[in-house]
Image (cartoon, rainbow, N blue to C red; front, side, top):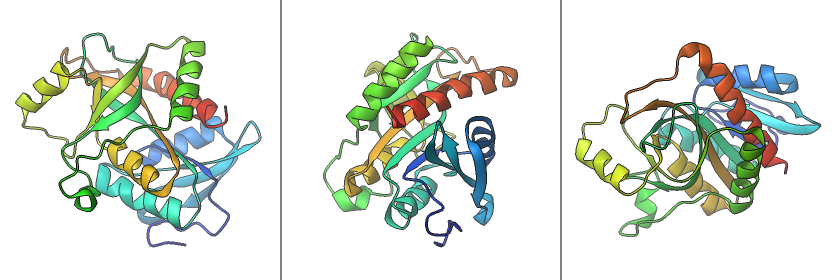
Length: 234
């Protein structure tokens, strides 16, 4: 047990999928895992462990934003021995070629600030995905025929952004989408020698204003979860 995860030793698998929303963790576990058991309920941040095609998998909510994800990723790595951590979540599209319902695989993550910023001081560390996971996820997505984009994303530390000038620069420099967690996940994975990837569903668009209807979310998010699982065990 840790401060934020109530699982016992052995309850957490080496492969962990991390949605931000604990209810999405519950949905994904019930939908894709066999014999899923709830292993964490501390602060309502649900976590479940089961099997997928014979492989043990934990799906643990991470909360919103990099500070929250940092807590869970640190404890999963340091106290439970997680080796592969894949963020599954939604993002906002930032390029006209990126459409709602498409999947983005985050090769790199730009950011203004992360909880790890103090370690690097004047250095602008460039967090990136694990190449093996990225390659396997790309192949999985192509087999599934989903709209796919691979490249840089922006991990924001605020949701209600009041920097339209910054968004303009992100778009100008080819950033595919914006979310709030992946940069810290990639940084922690690099620090501890673990594998990390963010597989993101485009749920809304900053340029067009389009948003994914609620009735279509389950199917689109299902593609994302299956891509993450296939990548983890390729």
